[in-house]
Amino acid sequence: MSTQEQSAATTPKTQSPDVVVVGAGTAGCYAAATIAREGYDVIILERKPESEAGHIACGDALKGADSFPEAIPKSKLEPAFTNTGVDHGRFEIPQEDTVLEIPIPGELAVIDRWEYGRRIIDGADDVGVEFHYDTVVQNVLQDDDGRVTGVEAIRKGDPLTYEADIVIDAAGSLSVLQDHVDFSTSSFDTNVNYTHFCSAYREIVHVDDPVEWDDALVFKPTERAAGYLWYFPRTETEINAGLGFQMTEEPMKLVDDLKRDLETRPEFRDAEVEDKLGAALPTRRPYDSAVHPGYMAIGDAAGHVNPTTGGGIAGAAYGGKYAGEAAIEALETGDVSEKALWEYNERVMDHFGARYAALDVYNILSTAVDVDDLMGLLAAMPGEKLAEALYSGSTSVGPKLAAEGLLNSRGHWGTIWTLFQTKRRADDLLELYEGYPHHPAALEHWQQRRDDLMEQVYETTGAEPKY
Image 1 (cartoon, rainbow, N blue to C red):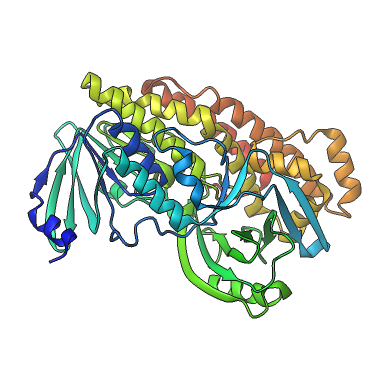
Image 2 (cartoon, rainbow, N blue to C red; image 1 turned 60 degrees about the horizontal axis):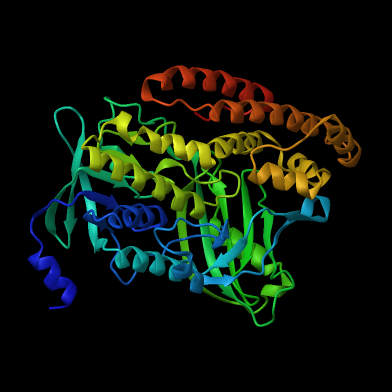
C-alpha cells in the first residue's frame, strides 16, 4: 500500500479544519497560504491525483509578473518563468493584410503552467496548508439559517465530511459547488450561465528553428468575431498555441481549426505537438457578490478573468489574498456573516473588478460586430489605444481619434462610430463600479443603476443582452 493510500485509509470520516478550500489552482493556493500563515488549519481539496495537480489548460501568458501577493513569494515561482523577454503583443489581421504591434503595460512573462502549478502548491505546503488529493466534492453543507458549514466529498470510493467555519470555492469555471448552495439568504450572484464562458483549447508545440517573434504575444482572430487564436512563446522554440470561442456562438472544431492554422504557418513546419488540453474560462464581468455566510468564491469561480484576453492568473492570486484576509478577520471575530465577509467584494472591485466589468463592454461589442468590420476597426486604431482598451477598460477615443479612424478604416465608418459610443458606455460603467457599495443592503440599488447602464450598452452595440 502506497503512502498516499495509507493516509487515505487512516483519514477520519469527518474532519474539522478552520477553513476548507476547494481547488488547488492559483486562487485556492493563495487563499489557503494567506490563512495558514496566520496559524489557522486549512485543507485544500483537489480532485486530481498528486501527480497531476497544477496541470491545467492555460495560455501561459502572465501579465503583472512583477507583483504577486506575499503569501507565496515570487522567488518561489520564478523558476517556472520560461520567457521574461516578452514585451508587447502582436495582433495579426489577415483581413487587412496588416500586423499591429501593441504595447502591453506592466511586466510580462510566459510560464510553464504545470511547473508554476506545482510551485504554488509547494508554496502553500511550506506554510502549513494540508492537501487532500483525489478528493471530489459532491455536496455543500448548510445550517438552518443558510450558513455554509462544510462539504461532503468522496475519495477513491470513501465518503468524507469536512466541517469548517469557512468554505472557499476555488473550483473553477461553472463551479459545481454553486449548484449545491442555497443562496436565497444572501446577495451572492446567481446570474451565471454557460453563455458567459469561453471554450478554449491549447497545445504545446516544439519547432526546430527559433521563431522571429519570441518577444511577443501573438494574437490572431478566428473566422468569427467572438474568438481568437494565440501563439505565446514559452521559449524561442516552444510555443503555447491555442484558440477559443465564446459559448454564445456556434461551436468551433477547436482541434481542427488550430491544426489548420498551424499548417499555414511556415515556422511550424514539421513541429512536434504535446500536452493537448482544453478548458472553459469566464469571459464576463466579475460576480456582483461572491460572498455568502460561511462561503466565498474566488478566481474563475467568481469571474476574476480579463474578459477580453482571458488572462486570469494575477487576478486569481489577488482574489485569493483578499478572500484569505477576509477569512482571517472572520475567524478572529467569530463572525462569518455576509456583511462580515463583504470587504472581500470591495477589495476585488477596487483592484481589478471595476476594470474587468468595463472591459466586458468591449467583449459584448465583439459579439455584435461583423468580423471584417471589427478587424477594420482594429487596424484603424493606434496600437497604444488598442492596448488601453484591452487592459485598462477605457481609452481616450475622442473625436480626433474617431475622425482619424474614419479616414484610415476604408469604409468601416459605422463600426468606428459604434466604438466611440461604446467607449462612453464603458466609462460610465467603470465610474459606477468604482462606487461599489460598502455593505450588502446597498447592492440592489447599485445593481438597478448598473442594469440601466447595461441597457444603454446593448442599445449602443446592437448586441443581445448578455445577463
